[in-house]
Length: 117
Image (tube, rainbow, N blue to C red; front, top):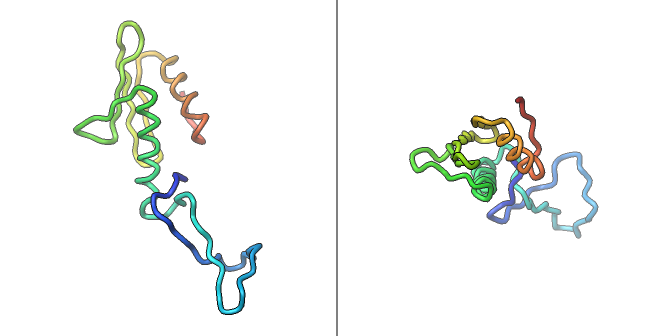
């Protein structure tokens, strides 16, 4: 769930961590978050937005009735593939394993994934 932040966020340096920069007397060092971290309120939404864009690039269409359901037709006989996503979990349904394998190969280049056939 490490999608880029859509707002500028700063954190205090965690206890026990020694930053490379030293703050002048009377000031403190803050860390800027470039990406959302697990546990932030907006982390799931930011990840969903990022994943949704990548799924659309793969040819999936988001369902109008359920934003977690994606579908696409593949092959010359226009077989249906369905992908259901919830936060960082998903289920992929298709008639042919090669369709699933091809899409998961593309997604695994960008996202750390584990899946069972």
